[in-house]
Image (cartoon, rainbow, N blue to C red; front, side):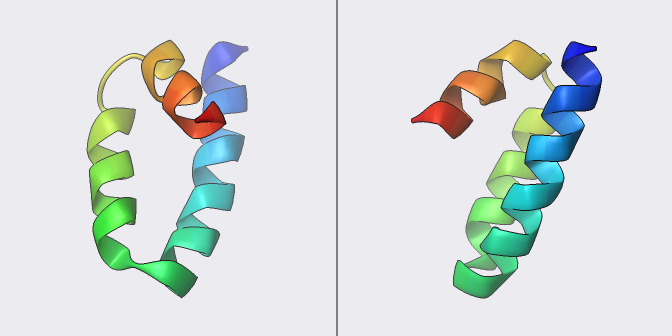
Length: 45
């Protein structure tokens, strides 16, 4: 379930990221390769 939640948040951040900067999207996408809980905390920040 954590993966599904993380994917949903990722999609939302991709849409918002394209509007702002592409660098953040690439960095977040790289974090997606790691564990979900790690970037979920980053998303909250």
